[in-house]
Image 1 (tube, rainbow, N blue to C red):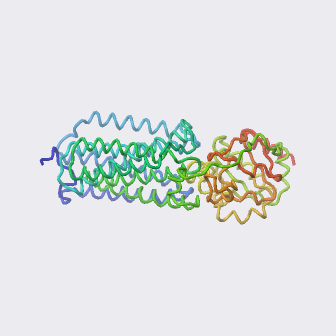
Image 2 (tube, rainbow, N blue to C red):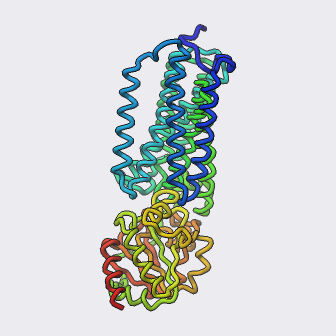
Image 3 (cartoon, one colour):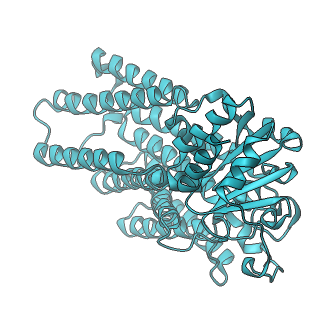
Length: 476
């Protein structure tokens, strides 16, 4: 078979200019430093900038080395520049306009685009190049499968987070067997494609992979969605690394491997934080039993409180723990909660923030939100560190969190969050919930702490409620 054109990977490494190797090394180092920076809220901004610089260098190397490699101008240069301009504008506008509460959706969407791009590149490589190399053909097919699964899975995750569809698990009739069947058919088609590379089998494989991505994410819901985002991010990294091998691009291999490895580690850590294996997250809905609870929240009494009541409880406490959640992000009340904490600290009250690993809609959501309000990092305490302190806490103030403080995770085996470690706010002397309504959390189940006699509920927008509490606290 005669290739239509020659891959960079099929050329001798000795022809690569020194400046290209040095630029690739610099970009790779920047990617590694970026990951290191993103491991802490204090250095996350710098890490993001380092990663962006590495990506810019990588793009420039491909662009200018392409002209040198082919001995002339890059073909289709106007189309390439137009595509770069369109992508840059979309990325800039999205980054400027996206709200903190919509960040998980944007991460899911961009991750899907990355996986889809890797799959498209591999499809083009397969169609344009007739290669007899089994390793390259295998990597091409791997990228098509994993990139396609990441693409459709990420789009479905976006739809769940954006509430374009229900966020609860969707279990279709015989869904377990259909998913297994599609997965087996995908693997079988991939093997046949390696043995007999034909365009027909390629399109069949692409279709099966796209469907498989949907089937894997449909039964996932509630608090498990952040874990799936991390898993799909790892998938995209692996597909990018494989496409780098196909194209002979070292930087794609490095970047994809870093994303794949970090995404895999994060997925594992989050699954551990949820207290159950990843298989339960992905397939638990197929075996979950319906909850036997029949009483609705509207039928059960709760104790309401006014902003003045909450201010008195906080103002005369010795120790307060703040539990931030998604509702805090929705209300954009991070600056107001910081002002409240500063007032309490000025009165000599001990105050800490309790951060659950999966609070919000993505890993580190609360850390980023509070860092945006210049909350001292020392005040943020992880779950394992803060849980022993709840019994000695006078007031636990829960702002927009629900599932991460729900005792059903400990006590109700039928609950979709059963087994997930939670923040033990029910062990505090008094509990105050700031909520818009009695609507359940993202997992769709009631929280028994809301009906505890020692719990008070302050209804309304979190920012408005906190502002009133702050004003009342100033008068004490």
